[in-house]
Length: 275
Ligand SMILES: NC(=O)c1ccc[n+]([C@@H]2O[C@H](COP(=O)([O-])OP(=O)(O)OC[C@H]3O[C@@H](n4cnc5c(N)ncnc54)[C@H](OP(=O)(O)O)[C@@H]3O)[C@@H](O)[C@H]2O)c1
Image (cartoon, rainbow, N blue to C red; front, side):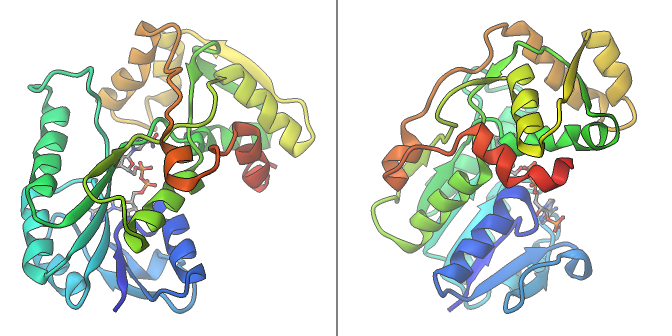
């Protein structure tokens, strides 16, 4: 019986697919665009979209274990499709910010999704990670072209997490017992300041990479053509928390029995993206 991986072309999903294959499992991967998916040989690639529930019906047929990523669509209705298809075990990669009020529109969308999962009767495991180390790939083009990063908040500190740690917990929870009803909040093993992350990427590629700190207004101008305004506002909210997110979660170590992977390891793993 295959394991269904949604978000299979994403940062975490690709690692989940790889790890399941390495464990000898057959994998069905959901994507909106199978032609562009570039998934490994042997993966059964199926077309599906969270905003079209009928496409999920077909994808989930004959599957008992699912990795679900929250992206868009009607969360409770998506959960209902899985339950009706007979899914028994679910890992769920999503987002939860306890500091935001319940009536925040994005938060309330997520919370309705979470509640539906928790009441579904499936063996569920939530993963609500900290910031992904992989978000720093947005610096790749300016590092490749000019060996420089232009960004706000150079001293912002964040316990960013390696996507492979998230994927390893997902696969652990999908394949082995003891994770049902648990919520993991994986972070990295230590906070890393933005300007130090830039330095570590430079070390990984063997070049000095400069950091030019932008004011929030300059960052807004830089990002204007890349992100919608509400996403830019959300990024710039960081400035409200001068010390950043420095909480180190015990969850990677608890779930995997080893410490989380460090940012300098991540930079070495992804050096080719920045050269
Ligand atoms: N990035 C972070 O720092 C961070 C931190 C905490 C939590 N998270 C959470 O982690 C999850 C992944 O986030 P990400 O931004 O890193 O994702 P990502 O790597 O960009 O991957 C998104 C995946 O979702 C799939 N997808 C998007 N819309 C879809 C739709 N309508 N129907 C079916 N599949 C769809 C895409 O597949 P196709 O394009 O192939 O269809 C892609 O594989 C999200 O739930 C996010 O809230 C992210």
